[in-house]
Length: 397
Image 1 (cartoon, rainbow, N blue to C red):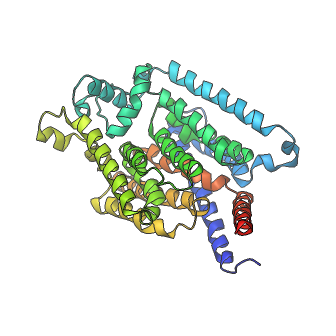
Image 2 (spheres, rainbow, N blue to C red):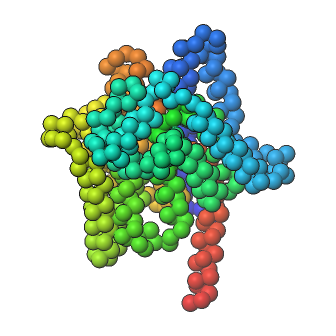
Image 3 (cartoon, one colour):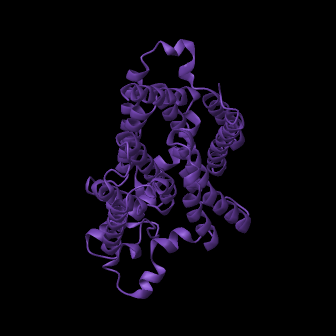
């Protein structure tokens, strides 16, 4: 018999699912409007209407649940489709002239990595639009292999391939395909591709790390030193990724032994110090550090107290997550949405237009899509596995 307490929880979940679908449509609608008004061929409102119809169709139901599609070899087509799309990403990145873009995401990373490799302070290096990088040290180091390959934009290709693999390992194949379809119909994602931006790819990388970690280990603190090193590195790619990482780790952190706590904290701290020192070592003086550092560049749009609230909430709400499959992606998406929405509203109020960098709203899309494509069928499957495990354990005892 179902627990009566599950009824209101299911109702809340349904409302949250509707909320995420609306947010997904709103973010992509903003992209269509902001960049649609810059051309005179098609009305931006017509673009939004057409997109809303297509997106609503795909959001309302996984198309692979329709009977006429259940007979196809979804797994084979998923793999072929992902390979084809990865090739498209590579070709777009390869043939795009970055210097012709009015966005400097790629060149900000490029010049910062060049400065780092040349023993210079990366946060004073100017890009092709006379801007400076706001990337944290971890992201600069992560970008070095792609820089050496000739284009930091190849990071996008790597992130997509990693995402496709992670979805394949974690979700039902039809859900994985559904996720990919929703991602590639998102104008926000295409903006990232053509702008050669690292933002969504950074979030995808962290999300895939979290999922593969949970899939691969029964106890995520099984190797506390390696976990400390890897999570420290990820936190130093972009500040907002601390939200899902805290939600993942903080509750379990209190359950591990004191020895493992010390191992984790020590390895995290040492890695953090080494990565930060690598970029600060060549800083010429205190004034340069004071005015040219990633914290100043990334945090200017929000009041300090909003940052503090956004930082504190994951530590509190980590204890409210019932299970990874049920709550984690929902909490992550909501808490990542909070500071970005506040920053968006502040900038819109202050200037009265859409000069806000909409790509920051895209941060929530990877986690939000997981909540959208998950179905009750998957949760039943998970519960069934747990039930089978407990039954087998009981029989042994």
